[in-house]
Amino acid sequence: MRGLFVTATDTGVGKTVLSATLLAAMLAAGEAVRAHKPAVTGLEDPGEIAARGEWPPDHELLARVARLEPEEVSPLRYGPAVAPHLAARLAGECVDPARLLAAARAGEDGVEAARVVEGVGGLLTPLTDTYSVCDLAVELALPVVIAARPGLGTINHTLLTLAAARAAGLRVAAVVLTPWPGRPQRLELSNHATISALGGVEVHGLATVPSPDPAALARAGEALPWRRWLAKPPSPHRALRAQLA
Ligand SMILES: Nc1ncnc2c1ncn2[C@@H]1O[C@H](COP(=O)(O)OP(=O)(O)O)[C@@H](O)[C@H]1O
Ligand SMILES: [Mg+2]
Image 1 (cartoon, rainbow, N blue to C red):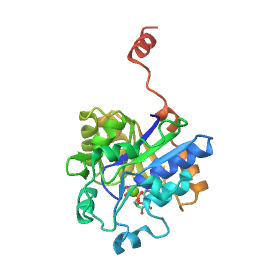
Image 2: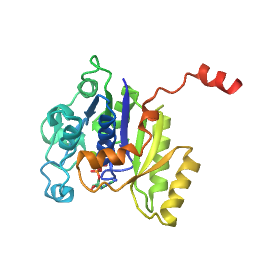
Image 3: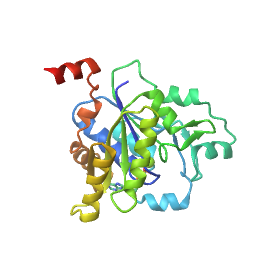
Image 4: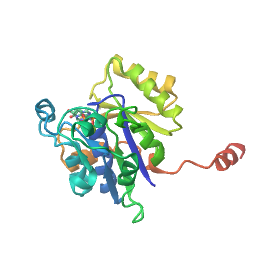
């Protein structure tokens, strides 16, 4: 499967904005795209609705950008603003991990579309009582992009997420600090450099996207090296030959 798995250091960090910018940029570059979100919660929570402002709920935004139906993007949709395992329990549902995996892989047999899967919450968020976002990312075997805040506290959260991802055997393509200020100050610049150095990871900033308009999203996504992230890593043999040449 070709694509990217977008996770974050926390909920409300910028996974949806980042996923939408990636999808919009891919589509603008002529890629066939698919978007997936294993579960959305908080659809009927007044605080969540108010906080979104003009931004639609995750599955609606991703569907609009990827030109799919919202129900295709996210098969599990819940009202309360709680983690998915609790949301399912409150709805009297029992979600089977095999069903989550099958939904994330839907359409795999067709055109090799570039798939963007937005996780829920952070990497260790439970999707069911026994299956986490991290478990799904491992089964999909997609490179991971971590959305993180640019400000105070982000070094610890980002390095913890990197450690958890690598311990699970995930390949981390990059960390994206979002929203990256137009005039970054000493703190943000230092966080960028420190995460890169201590995490041994490529770090980018994603500028503030003014509105959920596909053209604005595509412009922001185009600044990220998603083509390289999507490319298969060189095989160990090829990498070794290149070093010896
Ligand atoms: N690059 C950005 N441009 C505009 N808004 C951003 C950006 N990054 C984060 N935000 C804001 O942060 C909040 C959370 O973003 P969202 O993508 O919904 O987070 P998550 O999907 O991780 O819960 C939203 O209000 C969103 O508008
Ligand atoms: Mg989201």
